[in-house]
Length: 106
Ligand SMILES: [Zn+2]
Image (spheres, rainbow, N blue to C red):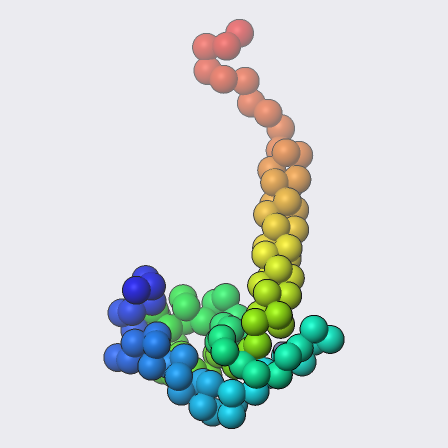
């Protein structure tokens, strides 16, 4: 059970099934590694969860697409790389801040 349970009345398993049926069990990403047969569901945006939690969107399925396993792996890797780049940029910014001496360290 994910932490997302609060907003929706349906279980993730139900949403997943709905999304797969909506997309006719065909992968929506179609990368060059695509095998077409969708067996997994991918959240198209990471903010969907927080929007759901705030009641800004009603249907979790609107933020999901059916994907095959190879495409899912690829898009997940891509997303985590993007997240990593963001983190690195944030850290670089923080590093530029002037370092204050610790109290009592003089
Ligand atoms: Zn695919």
